[in-house]
Length: 328
Image 1: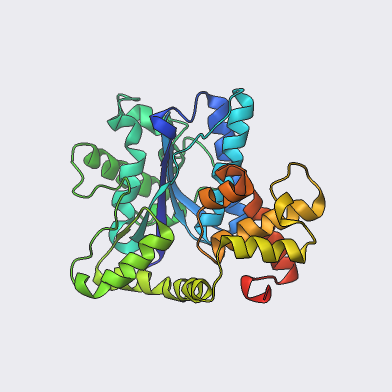
Image 2 (image 1 turned 90 degrees about the horizontal axis):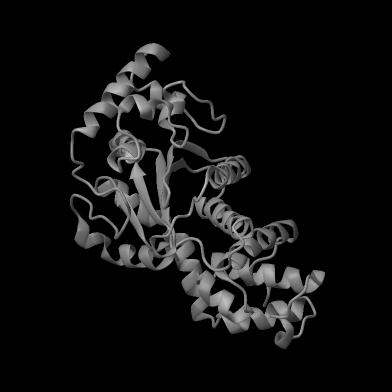
């Protein structure tokens, strides 16, 4: 079975720049490196443009959504403080591609690493070889990023590092002169090459749960990917049928932490109040499939604050073995 790799693409709200200076890019990379270590994920390719980014990540033990939620939420807060601004930094949703590594890995990496050339940020492949804001320069040995996985890619091009780099660079150069047949920038779920009628229900459930995602692969890969969601989807559906919704979640969590429901949106950092909000954010998104915007509206906090609270909620729930089904 092919290893599943996901590509994340994100851009600024209203196509505004999300990286205004090198300090912004360094901050983003440091947060990415930390998140990869915590989630035991691996980055195979990446690029940072002024108004968007692409990451190609192989999942670790934790869901990649945990990595992205913490990365984007933390960066957005830091960006706003650094530039003395308020409001959203990223678009409401990042786009993702779940891909069959055997079929699409190389062309997806090429698409990501050619972004600066295609956008005319650089004018030559030689410039790309040393460009600091893409994983291509790391693969070429010009820069070092300890968190970027290089061996798994280079070994596909040759038995020695020198040969592999030469063949990889030729592969990149060949792609610059070609037009990709597939749009890798995210969007609606891509149809597999057959059996589509058998996947419709799973596709609808997947889109409801995941959002703006493509799946790149043959029919069997798509079907396996969609079926992998079924257990979580079924659990969410069961809880919703049992009457679990956001108001009930807030009420039950507040009772558990001895917090008045009317005060759940109060400002301040009282420990039981902060933990209650974090648990609501985490269980609401993970186990009920609620959106960050819906939870944020109820708690009177931003979507990015919901994302930040999720990590605290995750740690608390893991430590005390807490789940929606345990709340009664």
